[in-house]
Image 1 (cartoon, rainbow, N blue to C red):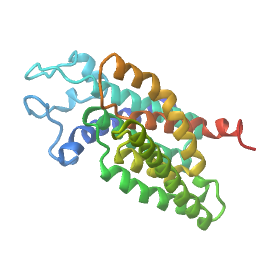
Image 2: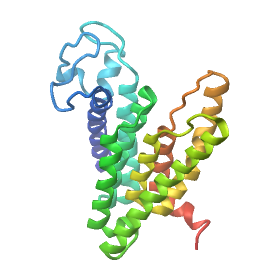
Image 3: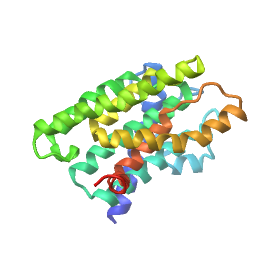
Image 4: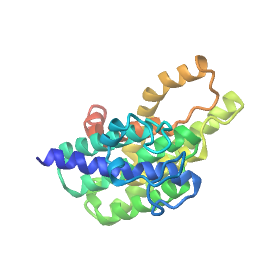
Length: 255
C-alpha cells in the first residue's frame, strides 16, 4: 500500500514539475494561471490533468484543439514517480529521503529544460547552492558529519570541488578545441550538487557523467551533426546514481 501511495505522490509532483519545466525558461509564474493547453491556451479541466492516465486516454492530444501534447509530460510524471519510489525503497521516510527527493526533482526540471533550451536556470542552481549549505548545516548527517561546523566545511568544499572540476574541464576543452566545451550552467549545477552531497560525491559524479554522456554525445555529434550537446542531463543522471548507490561505489575505491 505504501509503495502505491509513494508512486502516486511522485506522479502528482511530476505533474507540477511539468509546469516548472514549461514556464521557468519562459519567465512565467509557476503558480498561476492554472494548467492550459500550450497550443490553444484553453484551461485544462481536472479530469484531463490526471498524471499518466489523461495522456493515455486522450492519446496524447488536447481535447479541445486536438493538437499533439508533448510526450515529455508523460515521461516526466513517470520518471518522477519511479525516482521517488527508488529513493523510498533505499532510504525509507527519513530526512535523507526528503532532501534527496528535493534534489532529484530539481534535477528532473534541470534535465528537461537543458534538453530543450540548452540552459540551466540560475534560480535553480544558485539558489540550490545556498539550500544545500543550509540543509547540510541543519542535518550534518547529509555530509556524513557529526557537527554542523564540519558539515558546513564539507558542503563548501563540495561546492568548490564540483564547480571547480567542471570549470577546469571547460578551460582545458576550450584550449584543446578552440571553442566552449562546458557552459557556466554546468559549473553552477555541479557546485549545487557538491553543496548537497559533499566533495567525494561531487568527484564521483564528475567521473560518472561521461559514461552516460559519451555514447549519446558521439551519436549526436557524428550522426545527427549536432554541435551543441547539453551536459546537464548526464550530470543529473550521474547524481541520482551517486545518491542511491554512491557510497557502495566509493567503498570499492576508498577505505
